[in-house]
Length: 463
Image (tube, rainbow, N blue to C red; front, side, top):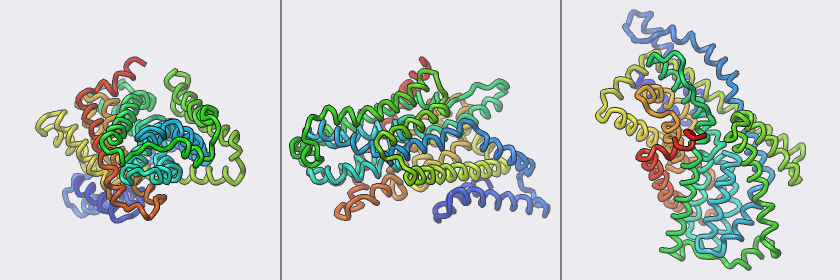
């Protein structure tokens, strides 16, 4: 029954029904089926008493201080998108690096990294970079596949570089899983896993991915000069409308996002603020930047608040549906089934982890990262953590793996975002072809984390 429940919810999601309602509706249908069969005298292993925990779970979600960071980080990201910080920054970086082979691509990666550390929203980064940089890259002779692949992959850095909404959600789910794993092992005073731990653990892998992207672009520019040609700096300046010195533009573009990153991440790393408190600092800083750029008005503020409320409502409704699904899954003995499956698997902990990572990667082809975080991680997380896996390492492994879900067809959201702002002259096949090397780079990072766990655990251990 647990396997049938999981397969059913995947099938319902693939039919295109809303995620939150699919999770909650399927779970309620199976709970009703279990109660009906038991009332008919059929021996069904369904523990109906577990459903009594639902009201407390819902109350816990709505009063969770950690999840308060979600609307605040979303607000920060949407404000930065509307204030056009990226536009000035991209112009400055394009003029700084455009004269090099692959320089425009490198400028896109660097700007994407700074936007990821400022907004943490993949869609906003991909659309912004697509609108601002793709026309210039294509005009300067870049291969459509390389240009679109670079923009899509750079946008997904918002998944792994803090402050990432994905890390906030994953941290909350893994924290509960870690406590549950310890309680199952008889540890009655369990250790905790904070979102700050995941933020710190994600810094080095995120920066290594940026280095990998830039290295790939340099190699392509060296091997295939026609795919990533150098731009004429004077012509680029004239095209962007900046004929004076590049330094004032560079400072104007760099200072706002860097100051915001220092305020948000610096306060967390320095121990001055929790991620939730830092998200409030970031939202206020983004508000000031919008005002400084003369973009702040009542119309814009209304749009920003509406978008924030919409995204936040979606996340919390999915979380409620996933909580109900998780309870019904456990009521049918799903957790015991997963535990037995992992313990009987050849290779022990290594084999179990490998299977989980493979399943998450494959599910990324058809499911969103939020769905995987709220549905799969609560099922496999407690079992893997009870087997002695480091929670920070597991969290970063899952985060990097989920990053690929934005690039893998047919439902890679970064592909959809970019397709919506890409000229019709660029075929969809070029976008799909362009992201393949970057998916391989992300999988390479997964392998590096698997063989060298210290990439994720070293920095948190010394902070």
